[in-house]
Image (tube, rainbow, N blue to C red):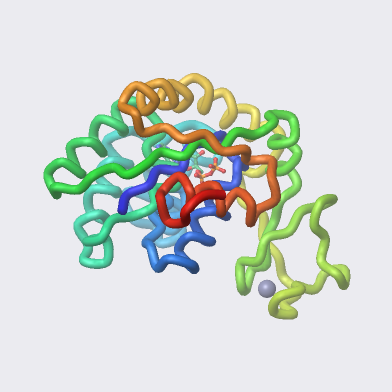
Length: 219
Ligand code: ADP
Ligand code: ZN
């Protein structure tokens, strides 16, 4: 099963991908996480991606397509994957078509998470996570029950993504509308697009995505 989650930064693609991984044992391929890991590890890819990501720009198609092509060839992807943050340009979408065709794999669905832009900007600008277990928090929407202590694991150190600040968020949103939003038309024309309300409660969105994939009868 291959699923693409499409939507602006902060739409909840990662959250939904994680829920589907837990419930259905699917593999999540997040180019954002993969690139952040490459930056941390100081690899050649990371070295090239670092500054672009910090500025909220898009990493070059060649790099990202290369990363995905390598990853998709791993044995754990034999049954398909959930693509989160990829493709982000028409060139990436065409490359993914080729990669899947070569492997004789179908693209089952593309789910667009529709969100309110203003809400989304505040969602991202305030988000941070537990440095130990990764649990997500927000400055105003979701603060830990005890200030400074992670609800999930009790750790007291938190981290914020370098690109989660108001200025960079605006640049990322611009890139989304310029480069990524044309993919909505691309997949609609291919008969793959399903639209889901990304402002609904997390579990309702998961149900809607499952319905789009035929994993449940209906919502
Ligand atoms: P978000 O969806 O919240 O913007 P991601 O973790 O998906 O966050 O991506 C973070 C950054 O990583 C992007 O702003 C971009 O610089 C880079 N990136 C991730 N995926 C891609 C991609 N498919 N093509 C180009 N750049 C990407
Ligand atoms: Zn924690």
